[in-house]
Length: 436
Image 1 (cartoon, rainbow, N blue to C red):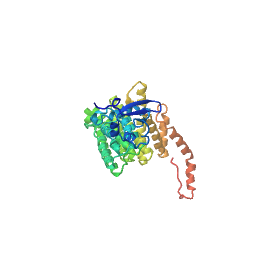
Image 2: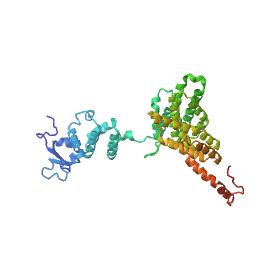
Image 3: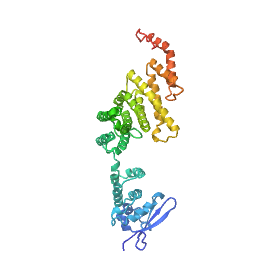
Image 4: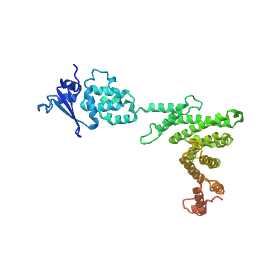
């Protein structure tokens, strides 16, 4: 008859499992099984063990363990009896149990059990919490368990670049592509690869990466500009609704691309294109006839515009005065009208998620307008602030109070401040004159 754990009639050794909490269990085992499968037990039952001459010491082996690993110790002792008879694929049913048994097998030096655990853990999928537990346990166990961590090892930079560039092409596919369902994931992961959070970015963009990104930007902008022309062309009026939907998709892609370009510090081409197309973009909204088209398009435009104005505000893209003034004159009324429209719909009980633009976006737009206005010549500032003050009874957004206060201060002290420039020994004799 085959030996088994707990068979007192054939047992010649007791394994006594104990915890500091007082749990104490005697398992009747067989020395030839223990010594064959575990180096720890082979040493304990050897005549070389220091206590081997003590009466009954070779007939009882005490093993102290934690309460949390007690059941794993019991399971391991049972496995020692079957590890050579049952296919290892049939021994396990979940990652956490196998990981617990592996820890005990490592402590008791059970080579066959370790090998079976490693083969299982290396092959099966892990849940996120299981992966975290594996990372706590496995790295301290040496080379025997290294195959388990193969899926978590860093890959070389060339493979990362290949993944990035392949995902970039998916992320910027045409709205008419038949695999557009993959685009959101590709866009999300590309952004994640570039972000610096608790870990360094997965990819440091070099000239080649930036060149590839810029080519994708050009392709997106080409599609966007073509859509503007088509929507504004009366010849294509029959397909206008579909074209407007595609335009919204394109705006979503541009908003995502802005986040990528911001991280790469390469916003210039997109900003320049947006400025040149500003009048057409606004005209498209003005010509929209369906309410849903108007809202969807305005929301998409606001998302992109916020990133464009942010780049101008921070000087990431340097523009001449005429273009900065053009941006304010075109987009300040647009943003004002859009905010009023969305607030009105929300106040009337509309519960469309599209209406819920993040408050940070509105704050960014307001801050950007104030900064850009204050960087214009004082005369242009005065015209913009005057128009804002004259319409305060209907205008609630954006709030240009800060620009008004700074303009008042600068204007009042302008003559005195600039007259001092001519008295500075380090300047030429030409004095500065404030604008009228």
